[in-house]
Image (cartoon, rainbow, N blue to C red; front, side, top):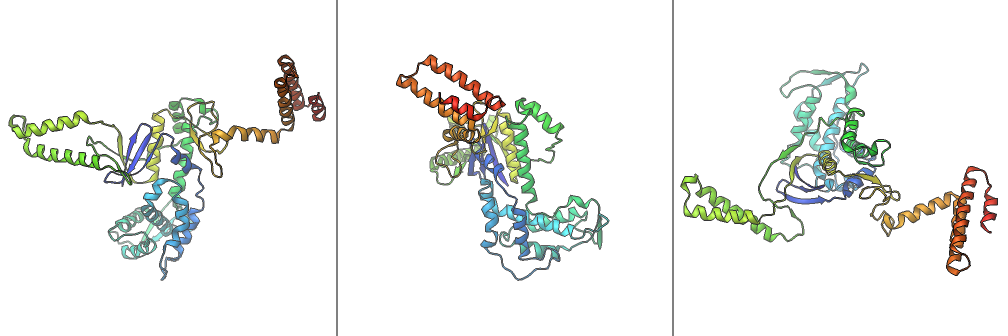
Length: 428
């Protein structure tokens, strides 16, 4: 479990002890990076990973011992995908392996009548295999093995105390034995939310206010978030977020002092009629701290996966009235501050300058390369404009020439004038 502290259009991602793991600011670049990445290789990589230790058809185990190299390809896709995977990598791998294992077990008994005839695997048999294929990530204290066995029983409609030899299940098409299925589904869902709820360039609906877009998303596309369950925390305690590499000694000292005052007051203060002088002194200290406090109100949530985190992030963006669009140079999403701006301020892969500096020039160069009449018009325009600076052409003459040149360019594009004639005319 992790804690997310939502602020105005941003958040802090913390562990259970409020240790800050990373923060997202108002640019939401981690979110936009996430939806742009290709994760299609993950299912195949996970299948190969599990198959090294266990036959995915017979479920027989072998003597293979996992090492770091076995998961490195998957890690190389996951860790750049989103900061969440850097800190939750271990639990993510256990979950995706467990979900894949359960799906394999259920799907292995699918018959032609489109029903399941399952022999109920005993817990001992199940746990031996679960622990074997998750061994590289599993800790002794983890409760994952038993928890996933319970999920397996739910999938086949059985119970822990069942002693039946066979279980019958309908609708087997709901069970898909594909690794990282939830990760693939999460990325696709988040992509669609951005397109239909926040992207101002989305055809037709992009110009609508967000409440209308939410209605279309829910009613026309039939997208429901009924399965989204997040626990909201209500706390008035001053609990600062500590981050690696930061000197927060003074904050830590302040929190410790407040805690000590709290202990004293709760010990001495029983009723308002029974206030001792010492209790009053400590209560005055508490008032002093309260008056100096800079309370930063935030919403706090307990989350268990990336989908919950990104759902909350998008919800905060909707509340803040955020609009996004794709950069015409790199194709990545960015926050819209001015609808006239077409390029983001990122430095794209392989570039030395941000898109905002090179985007318009590059787009114009592409237009020139793909539009020969425009390119020769542009060269002639620069030549004639230079004559104004040299004094060989007046502003009035240039304006008349420019007007006629644009008219002739339109004639070339409409087929009324051929390119050769246009090129000869430009030399005049």
